[in-house]
Image 1 (tube, one colour):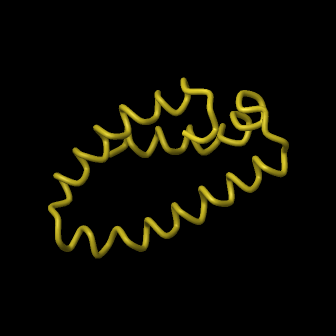
Image 2 (cartoon, one colour):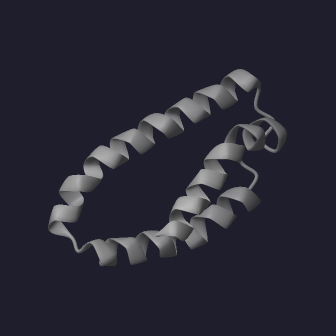
Length: 83
């Protein structure tokens, strides 16, 4: 769980720089992307409680970490913004 939290903290802290430098977005677009990321994360936190009442927490954690190990490097390596 600490690994997952660390990965999200690192991603969130460098996300604006990534959008401006690597994706060549303007700073306003990067700010909008950060805003969307924050709102979706907040909604996900609220939806997580009902999900954990139906699914075992350890199973959810294993699946989410496995997905993160695949999606995080793919996000950093793939250049197109639409993906």
